[in-house]
Image 1 (cartoon, rainbow, N blue to C red):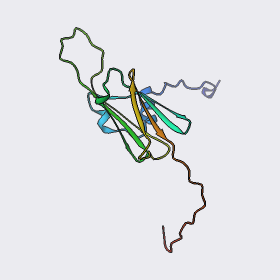
Image 2 (tube, rainbow, N blue to C red):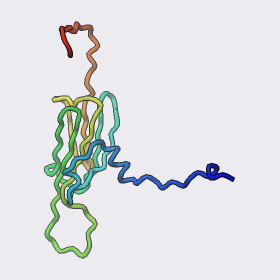
Image 3 (cartoon, rainbow, N blue to C red):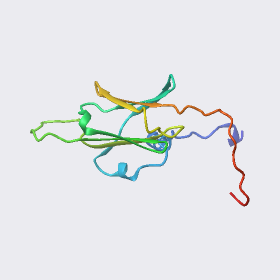
Image 4 (spheres, helix red, strand yellow):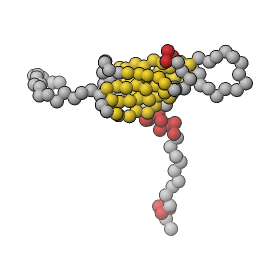
Length: 142
């Protein structure tokens, strides 16, 4: 009996590493102590990308949403209270998440709302311009 008949057992790929690849290039700021990754989900609804981010216990004033090109970034800072605690599993510090959308984020029409621990950001899909147009051909290399 040859060894080829018995496939080698494989160890599962570490989930953290899969998350790292899913998120795209890492933000080195998120690798520092006290910075937490924000769990998100992205859907496409009626001409809009909808990003939902889990940010329990935050005030809207603690949350910042920015856009650059096709990257949408959510940042939040949750400071710990100074009361003496016997035990706490709450997360305090900086929270950040950047996601790349399939198209650039438009300047107008983006909306963000925070309710019941969930931040919802609505980004309108760019309207494709299908009207005929001339494209100038230049001489030389591109």
